[in-house]
Image: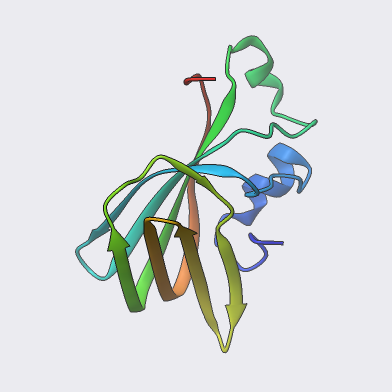
Length: 127
């Protein structure tokens, strides 16, 4: 699973019974900032069957997830449009986390030492 080597993976395990998929998500934004860190934001449209009990009283049609990649070893970004649907590739190899996001007009590649699941919340956005 994409979150197997993430710090904070317990959030996915307990909140969604390990079933939060990043297939066909909306790539909303990214921020490359101080101390060699990258924050990426996705909207997950495919809602898992198991969600936190407190979410059942909230109106939402997607899940916002923020991932943080730190101790960046390599970072590349080409293109200028975000807000597209994609299936990010996240995997672990040689003690590093790899992130690859591709679209016809955009590409992002990142190799880092760490990935943290920062925030997960219900989100009500455009259908």
